[in-house]
Length: 235
Image (cartoon, rainbow, N blue to C red):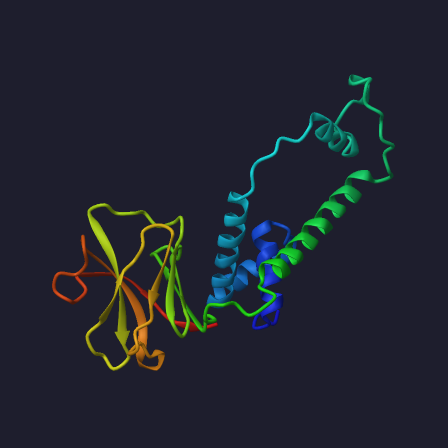
């Protein structure tokens, strides 16, 4: 797979998150996730997009007739149990046909989502040029940091356990081996946009780091306890 093709990469990530990428294709994608940080980051972003989309949709209880029709179509219901419902004729090999249709519709939905959720016109905010994913010891993402020419946009994941007694602080690790420079405290929920400092030059940065600090940040101006190191990757 040419995962550098953004359209293809987003479509496959959306299918994977929705669960419509199956069989050998799903296993190959999972293997690719272990080999490519770009694929892992794209998948993580789609999880955030789709989970957020689902949270904004109000649940709707379908009528009982809908479930009855589905059960009859799948051959799981006894039509004689409900004399008020008109029986639907069963097609040959109905079960494979139904599941093929469902899979096809789900795949189409994933591709449509990939198109709909991608902005049709250039966004007002500066485009993201680089990205860093802060992960824990089990490679679970904790923060996603999107870097543009004007901001560092930080988003928290559900894997992060918030601390009331401590704060997490973000640091720039200079490539020349100099002392880390603080970029501010990290959010422990939701998202935060940090203005990109004028001196923040990617060519001079080896990585980003996260430290655990007393409430309010480092008292010494240097990291107290470094927990995570996150490399920066071009989008």
